[in-house]
Every structure is written in structure tokens, then in C-alpha cells.
Amino acid sequence: MQKPSFILHLQRRDPSRNMARFYCLSVERSLFGDAVLVREWGRIGTLGRRRLDLFADVAQAQGALRRLAASKIQRGYRSVG
Image 1 (cartoon, rainbow, N blue to C red):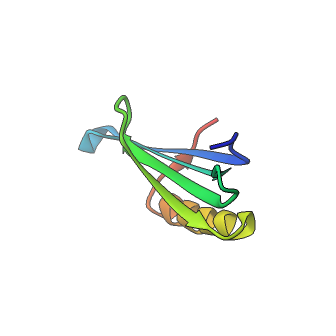
Image 2 (cartoon, rainbow, N blue to C red):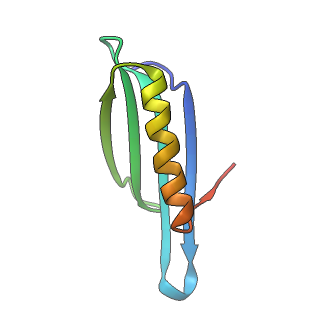
Image 3 (cartoon, rainbow, N blue to C red):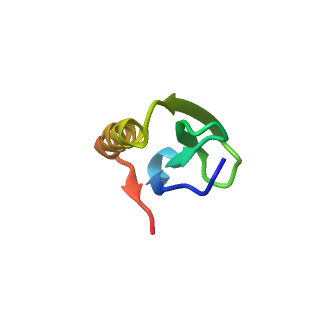
């Protein structure tokens, strides 16, 4: 994959619930030219999990990224950096 065209790092921390999570979203190009939405999530300090979603173009991938980001922000995640 090539260099990400857009990256968003989110975190959710709640010490009272022992919660420290991250969610990272990025839009990249695959080796075949498809747009890929890369989602990584897990507990802060771990490798976490990774999922790749293919899209026909970058605009569709960025739209999906915006929808996922809005959902995560609604659940209490905050942007980092």
C-alpha cells in the first residue's frame, strides 16, 4: 500500500471503567489502485486489530471514514494530535 492520504487517530479513556482504547482510520491506495479504508482498533499499548475495506474511489472511502469517525466521536472517542 502507498502512503495514506488521510489519517485520523481517536482515543477513548475512562479510568473509572479501566478503559483505554484507540481507533485509527486512514485512506490509502492498494497496489491495484483501489481506495482502501484501513481501520485499526484496540486497547492502548497493544497491537490491536486491523480491517481493510475496499472502495471504487477515494471519495467513497473518505465518506465511509467520515461516517465511522462521527459514530466513534458520538460514543466518546476524541481526536488525538
